[in-house]
Length: 334
Ligand SMILES: Nc1ncnc2[nH]cnc12
Ligand SMILES: [Zn+2]
Image (tube, rainbow, N blue to C red; front, side, top):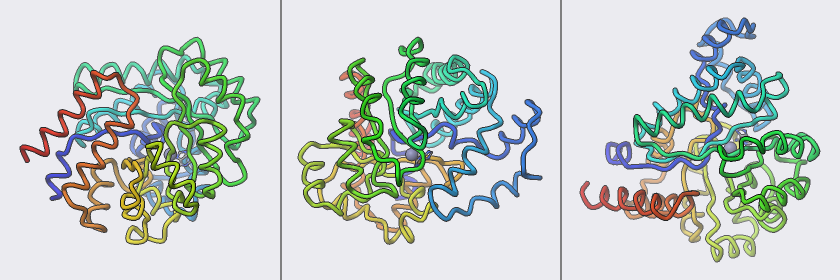
């Protein structure tokens, strides 16, 4: 089954490009840009991957990305991730970037977008991997800053497909960002929101009702509110679940305690992804294998999860048909 899962054609819908920064590249970019890291070696960075909660991870995540300055840095980061996609049989990826975190170091949105999209275009030409870029706002900053960032990003609007909301969840409910999401929606962007990762089910409700999220990132606390769970099922709102992330950030005690089987059983539109794979023990295949080791899911359940991701992707009808056919053909032949 593991070999079957490794080659299974996949769709990544919850991935922070800054969370793919492996320590080796972190050191290379630090040297290139004359940045002093608070670590002596690659091993020391990896040893720091012991998180207590989301905030303790975010501290290291923001620290790590401080080596990114030039268009080439963003290209190298994204190209390395796309090579991993190829190795993990990923056919399509929708990735987040955190422009506010880089603006704080004086790196323009133009530089960020140019480097990332150059790598995305190359990967489509080289590997046939299609992609979409999602501009994510940091919820621990003000809505004014999000609005300013949105304005600054608009000249590059052709390069992104949607907006998202990430960073420290508890104490920063979705309602705080009502205006900027309304604005992005009216400009035709897709809307996704991190909710119910550490925060309560109430935040998922806010993401859905106030920000009108089309997908919920994580959403693992959805079952705590049965009415909400019913709405999510009826409206086929996808939950982009990241199992290894949840274990690493201790939002679940261990994989065997993950609510994934209950979410699937409930009929929710669950999809599986990798979040910040450099920090959480691996990419798509590592997540699939960890889930399989814990829950021994049937082929039929894997087919459902894969087709959920086809349904949840922000792609044209033509691309959706092609993605579905690749998955259906794989299940028929393997
Ligand atoms: N797992 C996560 N939750 C919230 N914000 C993030 N930014 C990067 N990874 C994140
Ligand atoms: Zn995330």
